[in-house]
Amino acid sequence: MSRKKRLLPLLENVTITDCAAEGKSLARVDDMVVFVPYAAPGDVVDLQVVKKKHHYCEAEVVRFVQKSARRAEPLCAHFGVCGGCKWQHLPYDAQLEMKERQVYDQLTRIGKVELPPFHHILGSRHTHHYRNKLEFGCCNRRWLTREEVASGEPMTQPNAVGFHITGAFDKILPIECCWLMDPLHNKIRNSIRDYAYSTGMTFFDLRAQRGLLRDIMIRNSATGEWMVLIQFHYDEANDDIRAKGLLQHIADRFPQVTSLLYVDNQKCNDTFGDLDIQVFKGLDHITEIMEGLRFKVGAKSFYQTNTEQAYELYSVARRLAGLTGHELVYDLYTGTGTIANFVAREARQVIGIEYVPEAIEDARENSRLNGIANTLFYAGDMKDVLSDDFIAAHGRPDVVITDPPRAGMHPDVVSTILRAAPLRIVYVSCNPATQARDLSLLDADYRVDAVQPVDMFPHTPHVENVVLLTRRQEEET
Image (cartoon, helix red, strand yellow):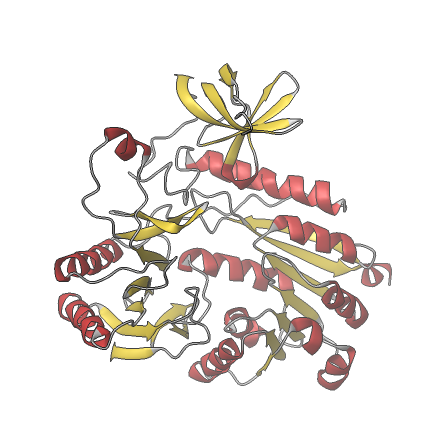
C-alpha cells in the first residue's frame, strides 16, 4: 500500500519580517519560523509551504498581497529561476545593511568574543558587470520554467548553454543575458551556442557521459584582455575537427579574445585542474593589473572575481597589517600570491603557503614579473607545511595574513599560529561563520581590534570580512 502524500498548508496574509541565511527571507506564523526565497522585509504574501519540520518550514510566494516599499525591480529576466543573484529584488543599500548585520550576528553569536565598533561595510562601486569570470555549463537537457511547462508547447530545442539548476545536476537553465560580467561575454556565449545549434554539434549528457560541447569559461581583465576556455568531451574520431571549427569561429568573430583555450575532459566532473590545457590562439594567460602590479592569470589561476573590490579588500588587509618595512609576514592560503606581492614592498620578507602547486608557480612568476625579490612561496597542505620546524627554519612571523577557504582554518593551523605568536593576525574571510569559530580559538591570546566587512558580490548574500587581531601579551607589556 503506497503512503499518502501529506498535504502542506497555504499560509495567507503573512508579513515578511527579516532576511535569513542563504539569501532567504524570514516570517513567523504562530510559533513557526518560515523561510521564503525571493521575498523582501515588508512584503505581505500568501505562501505555499513546500517543506515542513517541527519548528520551521520552507515556503514559496504564490501571491503578493502587498509589496514592500523596500523592494527593487529585478533587472535580470532570469531572476527567481537562475538562483545566482538572490537579492536583486532588494535595493543595494538594504543589501549592504543586511550583510553588515550578518557579519555582526555571526561574530557575536558563534565567536562570542569581545568586538570593537565595526567599520561600515565597503560597498561595490559597480553592482552590475562587476565580475571578471563566469562559467557556463552545456548539456542536452535544458531546464523548463514553470511557464514553459504550463504552456504545454513541445520543446523545440533540448540543448542549452547556461547555469546549473540547484537540485537538478543534469539540467541547465539556458541564459540569454547575464548582468554579472561585461556585456561582451553574452555575445561570446550566445555565439558559441548558435554555432553549435547551426552545425548540429552534440551537447554533453551528464548521465550518459557523452556529447562534445561540455563547458565554457570566460574571463576578462582590467587591461582589456579576454580568455575563453571551452571544455569538450571527444567521443568520435572527427570530434577534434568539429571542436576546432568552433574555436576558429570564435577567433574570427571576436578579436578581443587574446587567450583562446580548450581541453578534452573525459572525467565524470567538469574540473580541469589536473588536465592539460591547449592553446588554440594567443597566450595561455591574460594579465590583470592592480596598483601598478601585473599579475598573470591562467585558466587554472585563482583571482578574486570582482577586480575593483579585490583592490579594496587587499588595501584593507595591508592597512590593518600595519607594516613598516621591517616585518616578516606569513601569507597563508596565498593562492597565486596576490596579497603576498601586494604587501611585499612594505615588508622585509613575505612567505606564502598554498596547497595548489600550479598556484605557487604563478605566485613566483608574479613576483618575478614585478621585480619583487623578497617573497618565498611553498606548496603543500597548510597543516603539514606550517609546522614548528618550518617556523624555526624561516623565522617567527611578525604578522600573519590568512585568507582560508570557506571551511576556515584547520585546528592544527590555528595551534601552530598560536605557538608562533605573531604580533598581529589579519584574517580575511569569505565565510564569517567559520571566521567566528576560529576567532574563538584565538581569543585567549588575541584581541579583535578591527572588523571591516567588504562586499564583493552585489545581489548575493555573500560577504567578505577582514579582522585584525593583536596579541594580548603585547598590550600587557
